[in-house]
Length: 240
Ligand code: BTN
Image (tube, rainbow, N blue to C red; front, top):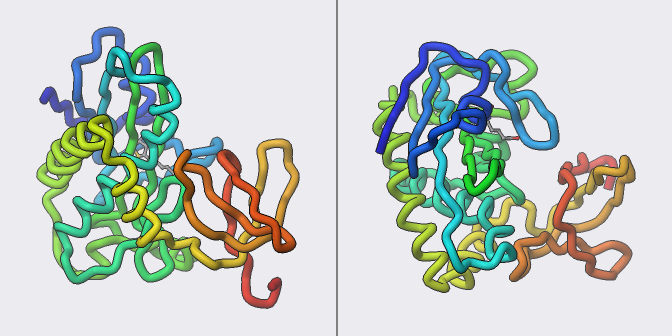
């Protein structure tokens, strides 16, 4: 596994995406990102102390593209497992499509991109950083929860090793078992939410399960609809 560690970079995802000769499971880590990117065009704050990294893997021959639509969920599943192993008493939850939550706050986010035959998986973890001010309402770091100092590189390597194993597990046909686990840890289950769709429209409803395809089921006026894109926002109690 080739690992490059940067003091500062714009974005580890952008770096690997634009790199000409990529090696399978090559990793880029940076202490700081000046233009960290989240999903749906969001910015990802990347201050000192967090874990910001990306890795690449090649699509496998003979695997249908439909199989790959679930890859972001497989990454989420795997990250959840690694974090659970690291902190066995902590209650991590999976927020569809790609976040890990603890105590109603975001601890990690995942951005999966594709360039030619490569998938670029970017992960940001609030690790040893302290989240302050207004952001403390929404985010928390592992260090803030445990008062420990984590070894960033060790954790990153473990995450990639675990993902490699879990991707094989998925490709060998264990999606159902993985999906069951994600649903067990489904942070959005039975929550009132808003789906913000790409066309700007907003739908309100109640979140149910993640389905076979990897979409989220949302109950809208008693009818269940499946959503594959769009951002989920949890509505505040007074809005219910
Ligand atoms: C999200 O929550 O919307 C996804 C956040 C992904 C952030 C990581 S940090 C490392 C990699 N480089 C980026 O620019 N983004 C990802």
